[in-house]
Image 1: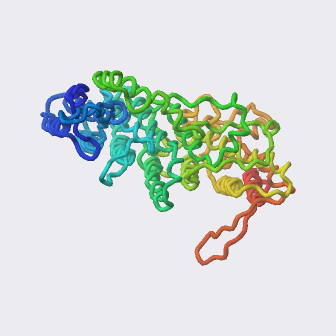
Image 2: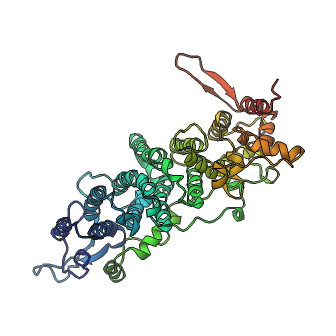
Length: 509
């Protein structure tokens, strides 16, 4: 079937953007008629359909339309392209329905089928606005939207079943499935959305709300199951880093940091899919006819700014600046990611407490690094700006962080576990305090077990902000309906954080 669909030497081809060609339609229909009661047939069919959906990105090629016998001798053949776009549109809903039919079958989790589905869907999700047009004459939704919707339907059903199978799934398969799933989320959250700025405002808002489904799925479908004991620490930590990067509002912190402190973007499984999961015939077609795009650098090139994590630099080493930085696209979406980062680290979420404790401990360093960079940057800049006001985005970011920090309640011992040599273990089974500790070491140990430990962690920065002589950034908020709005200042929020520290130590009076 794959050889038929990807045959590269036909004398002519039918248009395949708005609708399937007769050959493609026959192949898809034929696959759906297979006897799926045969062991392994469901996995094979899902794999083939997933592979077909990737051909729009890795299997396209150009060809010359044959001339009519009556054409002028000087006429040149028209160049056209086999796109496989219609095939991609048609196969994604089919393999989603097929997965939902066989979602209880352990085999599709053990033999890497579910990973192949996620890897196939990751391509349009990551490329986003660089994906080929979904229609030439119609108004079909973009391929990345179809892929995102398909992925969210699958991950919602797959996440609880991975835990349900428990020891019946080998650890490497549990890791592989979660790695593939989180890679799709990472691609969606960090995709380059700069082209969307050229869209009408109403459409920009619609696209932003559509992507909110990724954050919602993380909160309700993924987080409750990600803390399972078979999920490696590194994957949970990577999710925290992803949300941290996705919450970036401007590029000023990148300009402050020496390049040596910032690691290069990680190689993603997008290129692994290009190398390992494409059919042999598709590769031959690519080499002989030429593909539509080079995918070898897609993971990095599509994330030029947001692919770099926040790096904590000691306050004394920060280069103060009066530069305004560049505002990144989709400010509201960045705040949604920031909200989720705070929510994951808080104990406000109930249910599966051990799982949530583990995730909170592993993600907390990403949150604290994110906050430290902003607070330290404000302190350094305030010393040279004098009465020059900060840009709006920086003031709002500072006030947002301070307000969130004051309200945040950690799980007991979360910070202690986060910076220990085994966060997963100690987040659940926190050891008793060492009775041999004296003085400052005893106080530090007790502080790190507190629900306000994050404020102690940022104590020196909060002291600096609370005593900054320059005019403090402020904003007006309305806590409740029918209530007069009040103005709050960064200095007051920092003081409120210090007062909470005092109450925690029993010296607030």
